[in-house]
Each structure stands twice: as C-alpha cells, then as structure tokens.
Image (cartoon, rainbow, N blue to C red; front, side, top):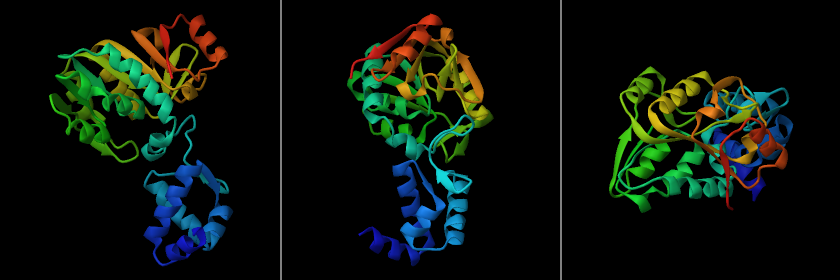
Length: 264
C-alpha cells in the first residue's frame, strides 16, 4: 500500500509533499535517504520537497534529514503539536475548566493545550471568550451562549494564529477574569518560548488578566527555549499532567511555584 501511494506521489509533487509531510508529522523526524526510498524519488527531489515544506513552516531541515520536533529556537508546526500528548492535555483541561464560572470573560492563547480547554467551554455558558487561535475561533464560533472575541493581526500559518502589533493592541484594550496560556519550556522558575513574536502576545495576554493560569504538559518541564516569557511566580496557578517526574516537580517546589497535578 505504501509503495502504491508513493508511486502515485510521483505523479504530482503537491500530493507527494502532502504525503511526505504526513509521514514526518506522524514519525517526528526522518532522514532524506529514508524519504527518497519511501517515495521512490531522487535525493535531489526530496530536498526540493523538504525546502518547500520548510518554507511553509511544516518541518525543519537539518543536515541529512528533517524534523517536526521543537528545539530551543524553533517551535513545532501546529499540526504536529495537535498530535502530541492529547490525553495529557485533556487531563489538564479537565482541571482548568473547574476554575471557570458562567459569566466570566476568559482569554485563551494559541496553544493546543488551551484548545483542549476550549472544547469543554460549552458546558459552562454563558461566557465571553477571547482568543487569537484560528482553530479555537472556528471551534468556539459553533458553541451556543459563547460571546466570541476574535483577536486579529498578522496571520501566522506556522501557529495558525493572529500575532503582531495589531493583535497586541487589541489585547491591551481588554481586561478579562482569567487568562490561560501554555508555553514551550519551563526551567529555573521561568517560562520560556522559542519565538519573540509569540512571547510579546503572551505577555500582553497575561497583563490583561485578573488571574493567570499556566497549562503545561510534562514534556515542557526542565526544558529551555530562547526567550523568557515570565517568572512562574507571576502566575496564580500552574496545572501539570500526572506524567511529570519527581525531579521536575522538586524543581518547581524549590522555586515555590503554586502548581497542581491534574488527575489522568
């Protein structure tokens, strides 16, 4: 079946690139040689395909291969993040939703963990929900008794969200009861993210909220990224899934972080 699909892919670069992206997003990473063999094309063709997928923000090339995994300076494509840790994110969302009461104004960032929370909001309406995440906007627009404020700005396909100065200015005009954000890395008492334009929006969101909650699946703990977002002490609470190691939790204890572990 895979060979037949690969042969079909040779008949259309766009189809092949779609299949290639699907493979890398599923596996996390792959070598160029492996992909050339799988799709029965030359290494030169594979590198052209990977160049195009990198331009689109789907994957990142490195010497000899390609990856969808994050690093300290690059965040993963939203399609890859949507596939990772779904059960853990759902457990975190289950605890986070208990903090929300009908009538509140709630702000959600463009993280896939916040999206898991958005899926639960229809049970506690009426609500006002503010977000810059296009996936979240499309989801929330279908829910009854939710007043949706969609934050505009420059559309970023890598994150499927709206960013930039226009987005920040729109946030600064608001004051919400609760803000839920996630971030790529936490270490030494601080939350970090790889990309400066994402950091600016998250900081504006945090400044606009009466209470601030950080949502973290355990893979983010004891990791670092390029840009500091905020000290963990600046959050009113941190919610982590049960997969967090004792060592990572000890580090949070040492920095006197107010965290809780969501039941699976």
